[in-house]
Length: 439
Image 1 (cartoon, helix red, strand yellow):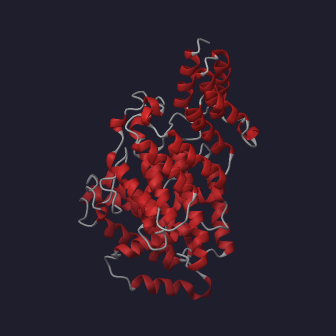
Image 2: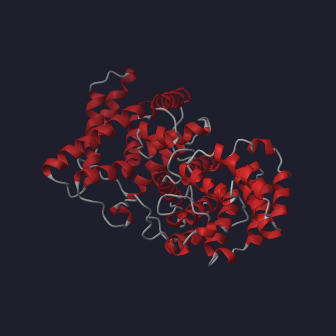
Image 3: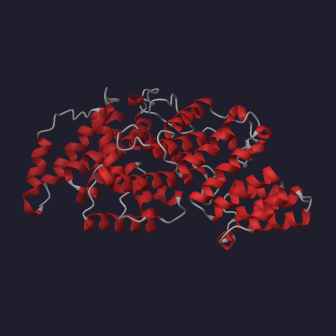
């Protein structure tokens, strides 16, 4: 685990022994699942480094087969002393055997086979090499010539080891649509000759922005799912945090903006245990049990926020992390520094204005200057029509009308929000808000 984040734990998390956390279950099925999640990116990176990016699909197939062989072998003969080295050795042997049976133009096949045969039998990689392989893959998946939505899908598939079905469920798409998108993306990588490498100099800054944006989108989709029965998809948030921890631990990613984004993720994840009620219903900040918030994650987030303060750079991640820190540091809801939050939103709106940022700013205005001022701010949002199909616009308006005592207008807005909400817990929450108005 990255230094400063001791015992990082969320539901479903299974930290690796290499990270200094408790070892995963020694049951074969659970152990294979653990390694499939946490070592797929490493294996893919190592194989692609040797096979070439044109063989990305082969690297995926070989890794999948290695995991299946691990499940069969470990179930019959027990888990080896070093399961990571075992899987790596099997994957390398499978890749070598596959290349032997292929007829590749230009004599490249023999060069690859020779390279494989020069590897030690146990094929162990040091920590730096492991991180570098994963980071090469990360920068390759997030290359600016790949469309933003395709970057996230490719990262989930190649870096995180998600199946096509899992990705389809995460983005509420079909398996066929995800398969088609992945095929087009891989073809784009081959046609453009995109290399999986850690860039340097001026190119690093441009590529790093893409990597951070992808990890932000990945975390955000987990934090607030687009649709379905689950509001929080913890597995997506965990993958975003894990990959970003790898990034900031490397000189290529040890930048203020990367630390700011990691601070935002950790401070947000710290509140996950209190975000949903016992029956999965949405709990707002004023209704959350703050004793359930994670002090270690808050502390780690604040440390990364301090690291983000190095230099003069201020990004949207800095400002969002600052807002999250204000919430985490408030001992109770009534003590929240809404004036400080409003200052952050003012700066965020100047830096990167958008209708959703302006809507959140209007909420802060309502807390500082009253609900009527909040409604006025909502009415003045630039390009407000872009929010017409977003339930949050009407949920905010409904809440502000309720606070003004206009229950009829509140009911109209909650009713409209309910027709637009796509996630189960949000629908339940809005139903309760509507019932509160007596309508």
